Amino acid sequence: QVQVVESGGGLVQAGGSLRLSCAASGSIFSIYAQGWYHQAPGKQREWVATITRGGSPNCADSVKGRFTIFRDNAKNTVYLQMNSLKPEDTGVYFCDARVVQGGSEYRYWGPGTQVTVSS
Image (cartoon, rainbow, N blue to C red; front, top):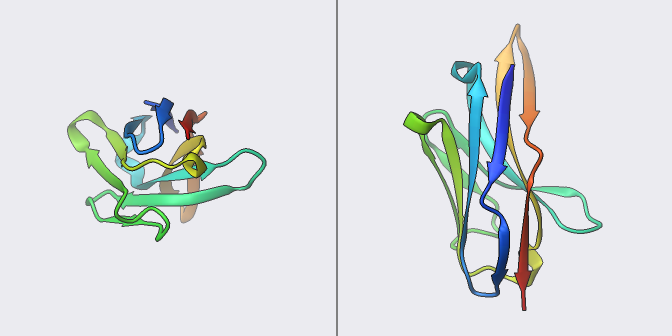
């Protein structure tokens, strides 16, 4: 079992920055990747960025140049640095942890953290 908890959301003006954190606990040795997802009000959850256990990042084209995903293995934490925020970045941001156990992939989700960008 893996648990993940997001933090760092809040209210920010357009053009501002926020850093989200995703702390993992439990069987963290089994995590091979973690990702961030954005769910805008009334819309489906969308992928934002992923980082592998080895630290290889990948971001959606819509956030490249503005968002950066990185990790601190010593703290078992993955971060999403969000710069040049836009009102359309408003929503709940979720983090997941992906593990493979017994040949099957499992994904563990956090409860999310709210980000509100005012214009």
